[in-house]
Length: 306
Image (tube, rainbow, N blue to C red; front, side, top):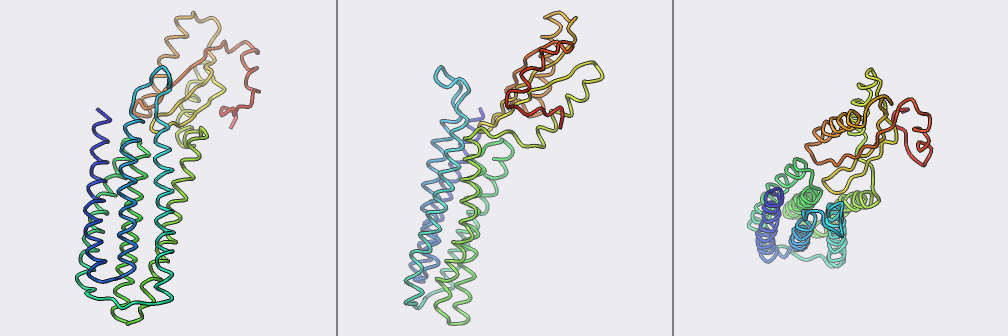
């Protein structure tokens, strides 16, 4: 069910890209503005990125199988990295195509009608981008959020181009058209960098966010009054799913069933913290036995001491 609900958002992104390509190229052909041309070029990147994201979303939602026992969630990081790379390509393409216009400025025509088409395209991207970001956060999907942020960079690009065209219209300084296009391109480079950096971190098995780790450790701390402790808390994020493991220290006099039942209760509580998008693994040890703490020295963070 989750797959269907998320795929429809990617179809929205593809549709938005097709519509904006048409609107922006009309704006370019009507005006001859390099800014409008650069903006239209980025929408082609949006379309390709949305198609790639849809494919990788399909892969990431596949259930675990014999060859991928932890699922396919990391496919989301590849999508985010590709989106970031495409944003950088679009930015540098804008710069490359704008430089000749700085050297040889060209007159612009029909700026009023061209601006209206560009504004329409920006509104389409704004609505689609906000929808993707909101649902990406809601469903903890990096693919949706990355594609939404990609569309939002397009909105900023369009806004910058529109301002540039209006400035050219009122001042008659033609060279401002390509200069503003370059400034907008440099601004969206940062968004591409952030997406690529985030993907690299995820592919290197980054821990879950510190505030989420704090939620877990606060819960463990509340159990200490029951003579319960923990150590060797390890976490990693794979797409929308979190993997959490820890050693649970319980009274040695407990039976195996008592320890198991208590561990099941704790695992369920932690899974509920994250809307059941967490896989929790527990190792039970007797709290009185010093040997239980031996593995704490094996290149691990002991959050209970932080």
